[in-house]
Every structure is written in C-alpha cells, then in structure tokens.
Length: 241
Image (tube, rainbow, N blue to C red; front, side, top):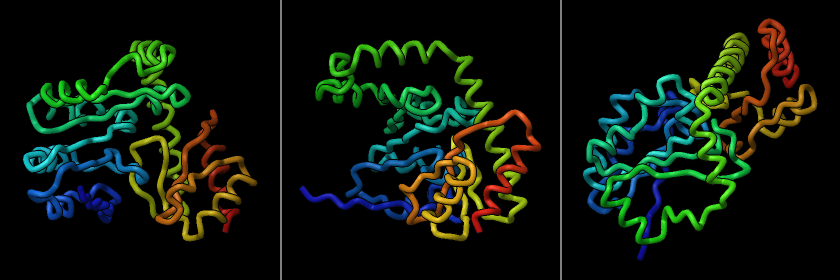
C-alpha cells in the first residue's frame, strides 16, 4: 500500500494553517494529524476556527489532535478537542504525562476516541495495561490527583514566558505567541551560534531539533526577581550578536 505524507507549514502567525489543510483534504485522505499548541512554535489557533475546521475535515478522515502542550494554556479545558469527541465527531485526542506532569522519565499517555474506534484499537492491543510499566501507571495516577502541582507549573511557566517576551520585544526580535513551555523566536543568526553563546554565557539550553526552521528557546529556569530576570536575559541575548 502506498502512502503520501503531506506536511502542513505554519501560517504567518506560526499557527496551524487551517485553510491550507482544508485544501489538501480529499477522499483519499486517511488521517489528519494536528498539534495544538503547534510544535515547535507554541502558537494556538482561534478555538472556534480550530474546532470548526476539525469537525468539517473529520467527515473525510479521522482527525488526530496532539494536545501534549495544551495544559500549559489557562483555558485548557475549553480549548480541548475532547468536546468534539464527546459530540460524536470522527476525532481522536492524544494526551501525555511527559510535559506539564513532569513524567518524561516514565513515559505514559492516553487517547480519547469515539467508542467504536476505541474498541477497534483495544482489539489491536492498544490500552493493554500489561504492556505498561507498573511504576508508570502509579506515577500517572498520582499525577492526575495532584492538580495543585499542575496549576503551580502552569503559572510558573506563564510567568517565565512573560519575562522572555518582554526581552524579545525590547530587542525587536520576531517571535511566535507562545502557549507552551518554550518560546520560538527569530534570532537572526544560525541556531548553533545562538545555542553555543547562550550556553556559555548563562547556561541556557536551546533545542537543535528545529534549527533548520527558526531557533526556538526552551524555558529552563525561573528566578525570583523580575527586574534582574529581564536584565539578565537581555544581557544574555544581546551578548550573542
């Protein structure tokens, strides 16, 4: 069987380009995979537009939404595509404990899908607890109960994002509006040069996986004094040019 994989390029706001996607979906399309917030830009689409596009396109093919970073948004429960799943749409939602729950070392996730599709997946072996580590399951159960930790992490990341956006705005650097635990910006220089400079000057790690697009920065620490944070980050970035 022959498959053609079509990659969706972000729009001018670094969001999922939904009109471009609609133009590619046809009777031969078997699956649509979207990440919201977008990875690596961290941008989200307008909620109503995103769900309207999902609902329409899911009539031609199963629409899969990866919500790995969505819990970093303040309106996570409203934005989630789970409402479409519950409404009977041909939509699946992927979730992970790797990100805001901090269980990347014990990888585990889950899928929310229409009942008929979920039953078909179970027959193929998906969701078999015996295939998962016992410690992973216990950790995930504890993470679901620890809502205070999730809210604390969400607020800490949001505070750090605001600081970085202040720095990028002051330096007049183009960036995507972030909604995850990283900031994607155009540094105007090769990513390896930026990464080496930020690591040597302040111990910041940048992600090289997407260096062929634009460099984006992973938020890796938070300090207590806002003024010193802005000054320090500005100094770090300015010193790389």
